[in-house]
Length: 465
Image (cartoon, rainbow, N blue to C red; front, side, top):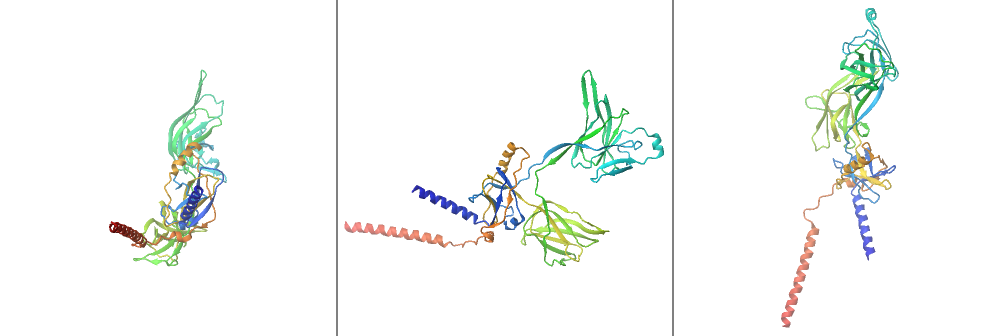
């Protein structure tokens, strides 16, 4: 008897899981490489059209038995500061150049290699300057390959230089023409006395970002043999993000000529295949030597009002074989809208090309790599529960390191569950539920029958007495 009861429970549980999966439209098998307690999944484009909830809550990962596992949208991790030391090319400047780091432009002959780095430096100096020039101890530092800001600069020289007490000034420039003073005076030392040694090689320059640095010797001491320079840089590093993808939505509503607007101008409509998280816009007029004032707006559907996303001057200029077009416009935050509108105050001969940049959403789920998992999505009624996944990730990072990230799962080919039928809201039930009235009718009839039987019994007892 107990076995039969347990079997019934299993059957009912399996039926419940099956019914739950039937509330979703589609599923995608996930392939996991290796072993981990948490995984990430990037949503392919084909997932988005099936999602009905603006917060993407009709999406969850299930295991092989159809049970939902803890799933949550991937929250952005705070950026961490990363420092690195790099040695930079150092070039001795010719004598006779302006003495100060901010005195004026440097008229130099510069040769670069194929990567754009400085290879050699020369200068054309007047005869007067050549006669009065003394040996130069000024240096040009090529910092163009650095993407991060410079926190400190270190000078090193060959051993055997003896006692060193040198004084330097430091300037910065991005074009070798305009210079700004970074450090007015700083000392580097290498002193030895009575068996004690004092060394100072660092020059603090926190927060400097420039293509070129000029190191100028202030004292008249001996040149430092084999002088070398390195810098410590710092940058904010965040977790890897999904790559930005560009998509050109299809034009609609009189796409070729646009729709005339009251008061002049023309309007164009575009439609995305789904409400994607758009983060940047680029408009191409497609007509050489044209310019137009453009307003771009979007909305999620016909019942919503338009929201302005960008106002810009679009242009396309032809210079020989090169076309100069307006840059992309980055939005303050992702816009999850499907319909887009471009309004031009100037009539155009044909619809411009609207390009929208978006990034795939990432979700994190907890599980074991040995099991089979599926991503299920698209439902008018099912909504994902709130799982404290970030708490679990914080615990994993405390053991695996702050830089640890959940590995990416590979999304397979789409499989149909309930199909598009799951995307339709259920028909509202009638105001009057006939099942309820029928139940009450049965109860009333049963109560009446019991009452009749009771009265019959009482009458029989009275007659017998």
